[in-house]
Image (tube, rainbow, N blue to C red; front, side):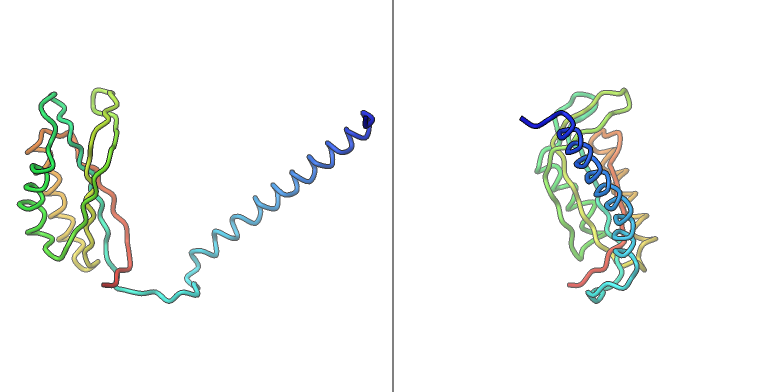
Length: 156
């Protein structure tokens, strides 16, 4: 059996090594992350500048009415989204949750709608997307439609 002093030295060395590794990672990480955004990527930029907008549509109705069905959602997309974004879109089904205005956490079936449009059309796209959000809220009694915007480079 090893002596208490030998075990203490081993423990202290292990602890020192772990601390040194942690320090190196902490110091090196910002440098590593900084190089990701310096614009000197070895991969050439492809595509044109676009805006990517993700919209999140819940299906549960706050008033307790029946949930929005697939058929109702697709009819909404055909009427309210496709005319303004005829070049294409993506719809994904999912499960989501959020805290409603009363503080209740709602868990529900949901849809994610992804739109891509040229950066030069951002102002017009923004207006159309806000109209889509309000139309869905009104049509299906929703408190909100979530929205995320990001810049992207797109090549078809």
